[in-house]
Amino acid sequence: MSKVLVIGAGGVGSVAVHKMAMNADIFPDITLASRRKFKCDAIAASVKERTGVTIKTAEVDADHIDATAALIREIGATHVVNLALPYQDLTIMEACLSTGAHYLDTANYEPRDEAKFEYHWQWAYQDRFKEAGLMALLGSGFDPGVTSVFTTWLRKHHFDRIDTLDILDCNGGDHGQHFATNFNPEINIREVTAVARHWENGDWVETPPMSVKQSFDFEAVGPKNMYLMYHEEIESLKTHLPEIRRIRFWMTFGDAYIQHLTVLQNVGMTRIDPVIYEGKEIIPLQFLKAVLPEPSSLGETTKGKTNIGVIATGLGKDGTEKTLYLYNICDHEDAYAETGNQAVSYTTGVPAMIGAAMMVTGTWSGKGVFNMEQMDPDPFMDMLNKHGLPWQVKELDGPLDF
Image (cartoon, rainbow, N blue to C red):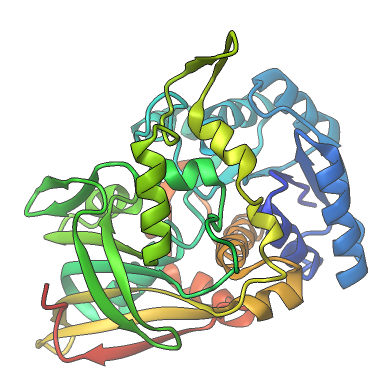
């Protein structure tokens, strides 16, 4: 029998354990752990109220390998679902190796002192996980995650070759706050303020952060400004699908968000290097995180929809060039009604549950470290339709004209 340990009691962790409890035949034994156990207890109470299922809770500091390994041994976890901070990926992977547990996360490792988003730290664990007979599945969120599965599903069923790929992430929700982030503020702002990079003709192309803007009309949301950014699935997709000549990632932001972020950058509040304040060393971005609204508190007030998908152009299986757009639309209020969390958490937490289900049931298996696009997309796509993230595909007249 599988025993799943979920680490991280934010919005994504909350969604994941709610959805696991709704699939008790796959997840008969669930433990939720974080540094602050009271947050786990509150989520467990919601799970019990909404599903009738009792999940266990525990306290753990995932910065420490020994403490994490001790908890894995204590509960006999067969699988660890890491929904904590990306800084903790490597310590949790080490704990899994020392205890014989399989591993899954939703975001790649990044060091605390540098906004550097690369997979090489985790890919370096390939031989150790393979020798241990364990599977590590990286990036089982929406982007990365579902967007990679979308791409491989299109490649499997519709294309003989994909030439260009655009990943479009639109959050059309309104939470009513002057400025807030829909997931961990520290991670979100580090990501947004990093140098933009996209893959083109075998090389990286860099542009200043938020300097390339285009408008796109998103179904169920409307026209939105989207900005060229770097996102980690570009690295894994260009590695595992080297035929793709150009891969870009776009994310929407409102004018008010950009204005607030610009001011915060200008006054130094997005810095990740330490400064001395009243004799103590603090990180400005971490202080900013402490005063911004907690993302998990936004669910009750957020209205609107998200629209996230991929646009692929290439040689179709019918021998003609074609462009297909595969996407999901998720409603913030529906997500909150089901799990008590807004759609940004929902669209990451549900794929985390599905990725874990793929591993627990043996539908996806292997020894070593894997990215989502290395797996058969079909069973994952089927579960998306059944568990709250239905997708649709339509043909466009051609690729994006920018």
